[in-house]
Image 1 (cartoon, rainbow, N blue to C red):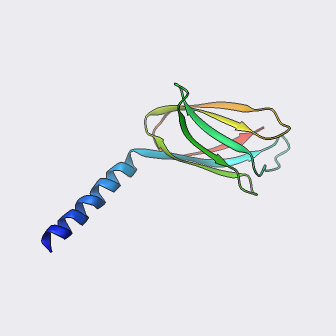
Image 2 (cartoon, one colour; image 1 turned 90 degrees about the vertical axis):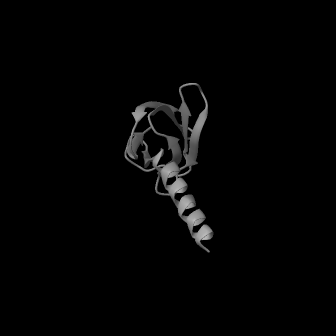
Length: 103
């Protein structure tokens, strides 16, 4: 019984430590008039072109990119049919970030 409790506590510690090493970027995508854009693609690439995370905005234009590496630089690429693709760089991300993107 003690062994099972010890294993459970160890697993919780490992998961908590792993979670502390990742960050997320959330925000809203809107057009130049301030109208939110649903179904826009939001992609985070690392500088070496490896995919970090991707998402699609909901009907309110909100997006969420999870499990990004802490202390890393990402290039956010936002695209929406009929609008110019936007790229923005987020350098050395340390904590969760809220980013509003205007196309």
